[in-house]
Amino acid sequence: MLRLTFRINRSQMFITKFLSSGPIVKIIFYLAVCLTSLSAFAAHSLQGASIRWDVAKSLTSPDGKWRIEVQGSPTLENDEAPVLLKNVKTGRFAKIFDLNREASVIWGPDGKVLILNAPGAGHEQVLLIDPVNFFSVSRLSSDAIDRRLKSLIEKRIGRDKEVAFYIPRAASWRDNKLTLTVGGTVAPKASGSMVAYCFIFTIDTKNQRIERVVDDSRNADDRTSKRCQSFP
Image 1 (cartoon, rainbow, N blue to C red):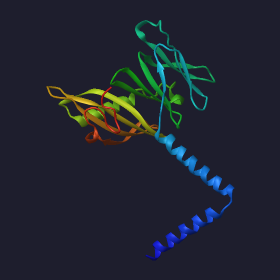
Image 2: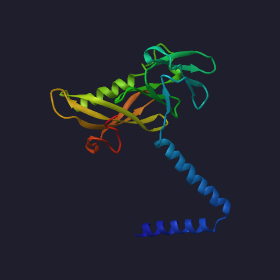
Image 3: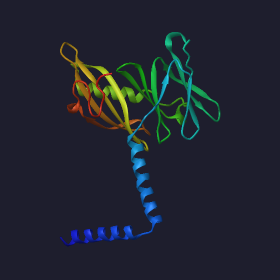
Image 4: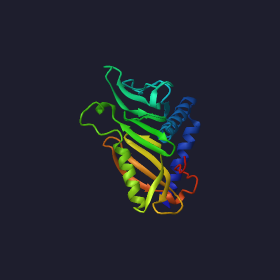
């Protein structure tokens, strides 16, 4: 009881001092609160830049060192456009993949780049790229994390079911911790109705390692989930 009273008194003293302080102190305080809120918003709100196979586009990393280039054109054969990663300083480039529909590109706070490729509705692909090591012979495959995600989902849903729709979305990215929600539906291999699923993955982007998996499928209904998208 004594400790609680002491804490209340300290809080009252802080509020009294703040209210009696000058306008400069108040402005600094409000700016600090706003910056904290913006930082939290940035960590939990990720919206990628859209790219399409039929539109030429260039996306430069926040530090200006790297560039994603889409060599798109409406006249391309087979509806495919090469997507390149380019070193801005040296001009060196290499192909990441062939884009045949659309994708979303997100530059991470740790310098990595996340591409959510959507070659078909509900059949998407996660590409996680480290630009610094991309030109190395020993680099990990760009879709390495995607294969691990799909493997874990297949183990969780069981051998009697198969993934019908696979829809990954970036939820947050702070430092080298990326949170992906992966929703979709699974269907029995024999017969039966489709069931929605939702998994939340925490990924260490430095080592491309999945650190944590949370199954939120109980909150996924037939059409949508608060966290995941189940249908395209």
